[in-house]
Image 1 (cartoon, rainbow, N blue to C red):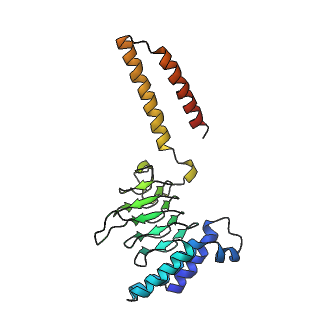
Image 2: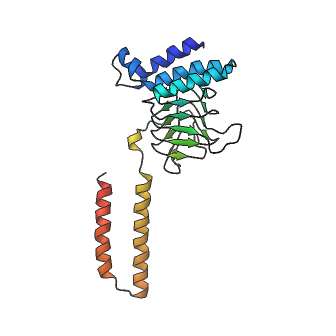
Image 3: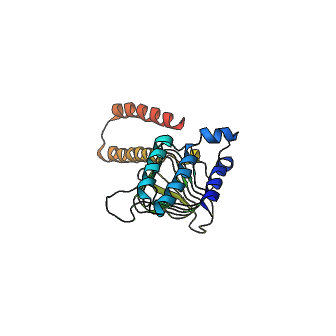
Length: 239
């Protein structure tokens, strides 16, 4: 595709991805992520033609206007949509394939200062949740979901969902990489909550075993701790 065809396609994405769009007027003034991609397309073309300094100037102006930092040397495929856009950082050697959805606050960054490939590769049809950090020369497979505020430092297999700090794969088809996971970001499990509940229950089992073995009377402390435990569980279940 020509540069103009790519830009035209980029401007068509909000209507397909954002139900909040009601007019072309809004597209001009309220979609910095789209403008960041369009500016990147122009800067990337200049960069590959040898106009590196001018492309970096355009990149700086785009960053100032959109609050999105995309290095002009990054590789971005077709129909990549940055929703809201604010705070998105895409590093120099990042590769983003087609049909990727990126929410605000995402960083596709490096973890060292060595030359060469040091930023992530995002395969087609993946969704990178708000505030996520995908760091290093790793690969996010096709059709993946990265939960909001996750920190990903290892490869994620295709058709998988990863959440947490550091991110762990919590769901994977382990079959067809063409299978798309339909999962709302709000429906992702709270890994920290589940781990805390597990640890508290495990501690309760250990305490019970020790009391039975050594015949220790800690009933008073038990009662106080049970109140704290009950209040904690109640607060977590209401969220």
